[in-house]
Image (cartoon, rainbow, N blue to C red; front, side, top):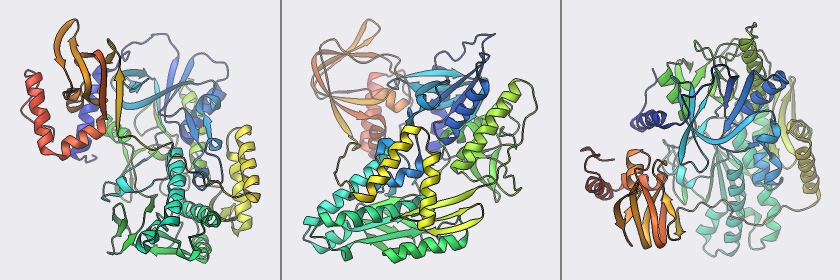
Length: 574
């Protein structure tokens, strides 16, 4: 059985509480259509939904619903080029509703799965209430998540390369570093600003540093006080060769191409920790830098882990080690669990070669999705299922500056020919004619014009916000999920339990702590008395603050005991 730490056990307890709160979970039409619910809007989820609706045609006895936290599908292979300014950010995304028009789409946060009542618990809208989405067949298409728990400081100081916002943020950060370096007079600070470090020698890391090198090199002509020799690029990789997913010869070729451009290889070591100005390695080396991109640290999806534990699913093992994904049979069905399916990164699908599992790549996810859709319909229609069988067509990795390495149908290619093939293949894989046209135009313009170095920090997070309310407005409502903590900056509020006045709070006082500390819905409604300004803190920041400072933990636990003496136990949060 999977071992869980204290934090994960707390997540399990919170998920159990959520199940009792979900609305509509027990409602069921006895003669309604068979419901197929798909979790995740990536390659696996979108293509499973797409193939299902295509195979269904005009049938009304099966209803397909796709749940995703974003309403768009990201074509991830092109993200490094977005980060490097070679492609506009909006040109690599498609609205999910546009890709699968016959599917019922729900933009929501997936919280947990109620296996007993066969419903998925989600928070939707503004995330203030839980809803139960019922299913007859459930397809897990949830990708991996990023986890830097074993590397102190990396989560706080490293840049990732997982989604559109990461690419956008990286590009703006690099341009900002060039702007600062151009006017920096202290050599040590300038050197750190011009040192760009990427951790991870797989596809994502190699492609990111290749595109990043091109962006910086093509931008230097606009920064007259930066000498090309002052710029450093370093690639950290735990193994001794790059691109372990590719043939060894192509990994060596990629290394030679990057080294020829001046990229320094830091091999056979790992990142131990990171701070605002340094990256610390396991071999005791320290790299001063203000730009650290970490493409390693993938971890199993917590929803998948909880479902495996709670539902008795078989967890896939690799070399005897549990890897946090569902083990499936050759038909993509979770072992011993009829009606439950897994595709893509969260699935341990037996490889058709008979050795290990299928790789978690887009080309396998798309083919698995098609086989899964076919088998779901076969199950519904009580027909024989088919075994998934697919042989990889090849692997490609772009290195920027019109160079790449590729293996296609057993043929190994490097340099310009591989780069041209990489672009051609991915252009035709990009969904939607309009997106292909736009990307093709971006690439054409990029051949003749310089990269855009405009800095726009549109994704900069705001930790604290000030909210204003007019007289009589409801700030929180009874029964809503606790998302925020409030400090009254100006004015006063009243706390109501139904029509009963519980308390009046004024400037300097706080509210909203109970729902955050106890993982419970709001117990009362809070309304503004006159004009009110509030300092609002997110749930994650509030909990981090309270758990980090015992004095604050004690203060809020005492506050809870004063306000809710019958609801509090003797224990604190920490």
